[in-house]
Length: 208
Image (cartoon, rainbow, N blue to C red; front, side, top):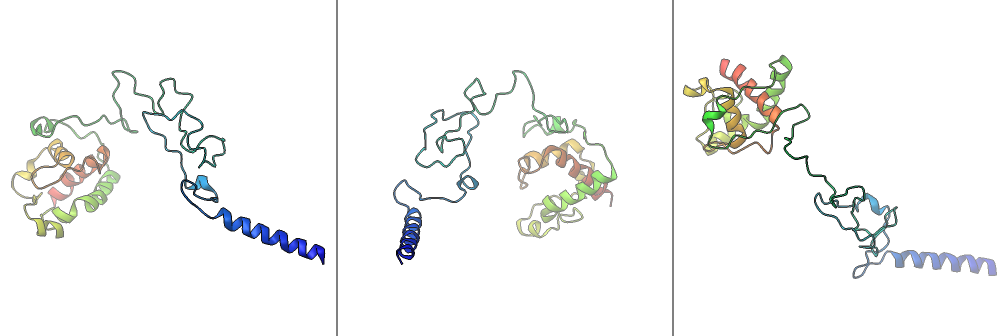
């Protein structure tokens, strides 16, 4: 009988302790299950929190340091991201340089050649990208008959007038920086993908 009472007492104590650990108040969030699954270490690119005790009250890190400690001890400059070497230029994984021409430099853009080799696969990818980013305004065939274009108006007919003779670099520049009622898409579409759209516009849309 005493053993049974002891087991019940231990069970009740354990249950009470479990309920108490679920409580949260003030700066204490309570006991968390697998906390590292949702408390990621926020590494700032150009700054560090070097105090290993920072956020210790919250931490469940496996390395035993405070929750907010985010220092990279292997970086001699006190940063989590090294600065690029002086006088270097970043390239994409395929070797493409950043596009440097300013918004107003359409004349300079006209002299820029498409660096992406024209292939059937590139045209197929360009078509998918055109449908995704361009068809809503310019229409599936480029005749400014997209559903959004009907609403906002003033959309370029890619098959009409002077648009047929526009250089590839001009089209790329407009996709990048926007022009008139068209917004800039340089932050949404990578350089290589923009050039693939240009290929599709020149080789398919404007030759239909």
